[in-house]
Image 1 (cartoon, one colour):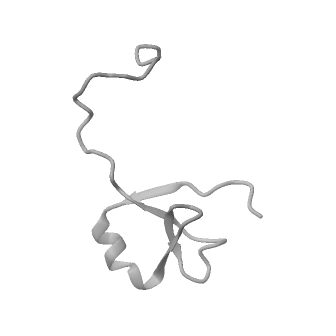
Image 2: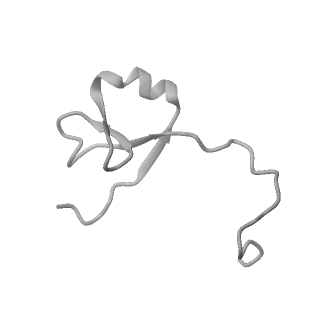
Image 3: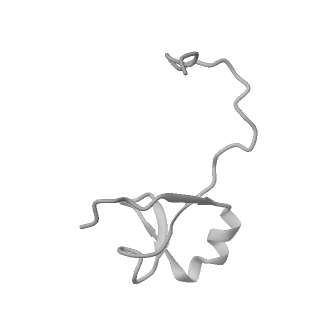
Length: 67
């Protein structure tokens, strides 16, 4: 078993759709990996749901002001 985890790469939903024939969804990783070799090799892709703009609401984290 691998001890160093591969980093997740965030891609647009349209890229996942285009690459669907060569990708499969891994529920253990909550990400898409290459079919056949994805368990050991290749990228780990997630749909980019992050906002392009920063959050404009009130900061509610406990240590928001601490750097």
